[in-house]
Structure formats: C-alpha cells, structure tokens
Image (cartoon, rainbow, N blue to C red; front, top):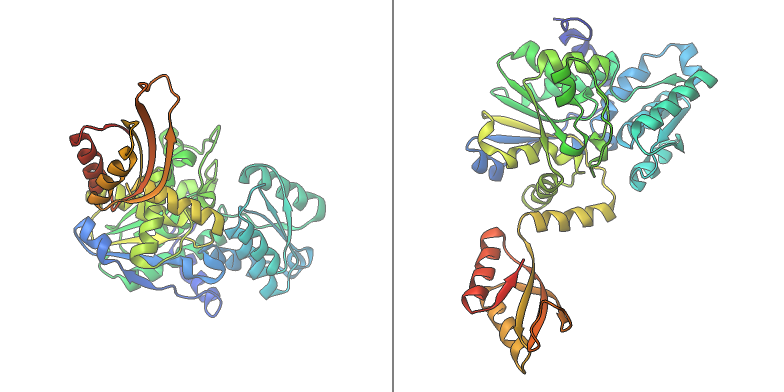
Amino acid sequence: MSAPGEGIGIEEVRAAREVLRGVAIETPMEESRWLSALVGGPVSLKCENLQRTGSFKARGAYVRISRLSPDERARGVVAASAGNHAQGVALAAQQLGIRATVFMPEGAPIPKEKATRGYGAEVVFEGRYLEDALVAARRFATETGAVLIHPFDHEDVMAGQGTVGLEILEQVPDVETVVVPTGGGGLLAGIAIAVKALRPEVSVIGVQAKGAAAYPGSLQQGAPVPLTSMKTMADGIAVGMPGELTFAAVRDFVDDVVTVTEEEMSRALLALMERAKMVVEPAGAAAVAALLADPGAYRTPAVAVLSGGNIDPILLGKVIQHGMAAAGRYLNLHVNIPDVPGGLARLLSEVGETGANVLEVAHERISPSLHLDEVDVHLQLETRGLPHAELVTGRLRARGYRVLE
C-alpha cells in the first residue's frame, strides 16, 4: 500500500523495521490510570523518551544514513536540528563510521548540543530558527559534497519514524486513537501511514504548539505555507513549514491536527513527572497536553506518544513552576490590610487556616491606591490546585479583606 501521490507505504515501514533491529529499541507502552480516569477509557503512553538518544529521531536518522552509497558515506553527512535529530544523526554516523556535521539554531538546549558532540559530530550554530540552520546545512552540503540528512522530509526518515506506528498496533491491538506531537511531520506521517494501512478505522491526531503551528494553515491552503513567526518553548516541534512529503502524507492519512498552549504543555509535563514518573521535554508532552485540554474528544483505547525526553535542567525547573502556576498550585495575591500591630499576623493566620503554604511575603505602604492607614501585602502561596486556591481567596474576602489576584 503506497501513499496517494508522493511518499511511502507499509512495505517501506516494514523494511525500515528490519534495518533498525538491534539498533533502535522497542520502547515501552505504559498504561496511564490517571489519564484513563480523566478521558473515560484506557489511555497508554508510548515512551519514545526512553529511545536511544532520548527521542524517536534515532529511528529515521539511522535508516536514512544506513542506505547511503559508499561514495556518499565517504563525503560525510550534514544535518540541521534543534537537538533531537542532531543526536540521532550523530549516533547513526558514529555507528556507521561516517563523519557528521550538525547545524543548530542559536539557543538550542545545552544538553542536546553536548550529547551531539559526545556522539562525535561537529556542531555549528547558525541563525535563530531551525529553518536558518537548514539553509546553512544545505549550503554546507553544496560546498563540501556532504549528504544532507533532512530532519523529516525524506522517505527513509518517514519510514524509520513509522516503525513507532507498527509497535503501537502490536502493543495496543485494540487502539482507537493515536495522538502524536508534530513539528515538521515526519513522526506523524510515518505513524499515520503504518496505522492506516493496517487499521484504517483508527484515528490519528497530530498536536502542534499553538505558537508554532504550521500545519493547520497549510492544510487549509492545500499546500505547505511558512509561518511568519514562531514562539514556543517546545523546540522539538518548532518547525515553521511542513515538508512536501510529510505534508502529503498528513493531508492524506491524518484525521486532524490540533494545537496546545504553553500552559497546557507545562501542565502536561508536570503531570507526567508527578503521575507517570516520566521526564519529557515540552514537545514530548504535547500529546498528553491535548488529552488534558479536551479529554472528551478522543475515542479510547487511546495512545499518546511521548516523543522526546531531552530537556535542559534549567528549563525543566522553569516549566515545572509554570505548570504549577497553570494548574493553580501557585497563587499570587495582593491583600490590603489595616496598618496596625498584629494586622499581618492575623492575615497569615487566616491563610494558615486554609492549609495554604506561604512562600513569600512583601509589603508596600506607599501607593496612590492605598489609604493612609492601609498596607498592601503581596503573598505568594502554594495551594493544592484551583479549587483550593478559590477557597483561599473566598475565605479572605469573607473575612473582609480586599483581595486582588
């Protein structure tokens, strides 16, 4: 079964699986009870964050590079990547004894850069976005003869990523919905081709970061359309324009492409850490973010793909805090209290009675919005979630305090 128009079929995906035997691992499929309870049916997590190099990218990169001719191998390979494809290319090149150069956009996560260098590749920073790095990689290929290993828009890459789809069908034979984080579309396209060939009734849903969602507009226009700007912490799916091959496959095989916000990805990442004990990067949490944002929209049994786990520890700390704030676990309040002895103690006593934890207290006495006998107290509190946060503010207002959130 070949894709309509351009692209690959199930035969190519199966052949890629043979190439990957002994190279890529068959990643675990973990049942998620908390997601199942929320969605109202069985939900499982396909843990590509546990793949070699920490993401699914190792699959497609190895298939592509393993099929180079002796002459092409001698010229070396070049790639452009924010990090995960870079590591996949670097590992494959190292295993096959091929020289690799990788162009990364400025600001690529430090752990991804270090891991890429650790696999023996030369790393060059170029531009702000992946597209800038891709231009530099193409120029390098023209000047040196190195073979460009595209991060998503190549049949071998798509076939390699499609092996994830074969594993999903084997691990969850009765699956009804597969939800996939999506940037350029290589993983989504590969999975959709494999799944639809064997189980055409299964829904395949792509998920993009709202601030870097090239597919919805492109699908509406009927052709790949570049974004004019992008802004997202999910560097793994920050791609400004679909590929020609991936677009055709997504158009023909994917049921829908939805978007999630930064807050939704933060909440999903935090929930995966707390409930599933899984460390993922923001892009890797996108599928779970979609389930959390609209739990009634997906037929079950459902599988959410955790596409990658390579996250900078500094960013991880920020995202955890962001996720806690989005989930109502941090509460910032401005409370006006009488400027009298014991006023602050009484306020904190009221807060303590609610079970909230005080993280920070700050006073302000000089403000045109305050009366002469008032003090503005800024409280940063840790709560158990949105209902608890509402209880805290409700109690303070009931006690006569003027509260601003």
